[in-house]
View 1 (cartoon, rainbow, N blue to C red):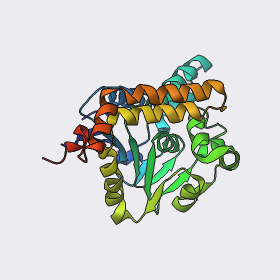
View 2 (view 1 turned 120 degrees about the horizontal axis):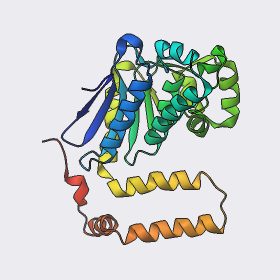
View 3 (view 1 turned 45 degrees about the horizontal axis):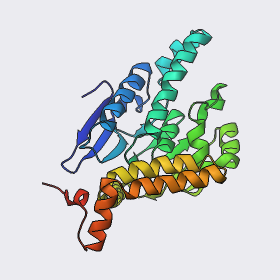
Length: 265
């Protein structure tokens, strides 16, 4: 148990990182940001962990910044605010760059930085009653450190609207915008997550880490000589890696690859 979060890892290597401040709608402060950043670093380095599920306890997924933390920040100097902002930016970057598949399990509202957490995950599934809001402009602020990930998820055009209006939108709209991959009834949420976890566990873990790095690289464009050469070098390197050789051999021999042999015990 950590301060404001809890981690559970099952026998398959699926780690569920629970935001565990339900009475505060899983809002985060400087202490929780530091603790979550450290925990993500620990899980990233744990070879037994194959998949991360980021989840929230209680009614809300995450309300973003904790009100008491915001009150303290109101009296901070610019330098102190920069230090806090750097810490939150670091959390978002660590989650976005997490070297294993990361799924957001969104069981309730996600506001402000909570939307950033969803956008940083590779896959996002929510209950169809969830609501979302990039609420910062209502407070005279901007969704600054989460913006690279939210804009990547929903596009610049949609970001212009929802950053500026700070309006609340529902799960159907979030799916249409690209923030969510699926929106399902509450009683189908865990089954929907499991339906995604299963194929993730069947894929090569090293290949998945490389896929994430590949998407990050090509999304920065342009498709020039350097991009073409880089993508060719990446696949050549993977083909001769132990995992690449095992995957091809398993396919040709009509068997499961070594990494897919794990299951509930």
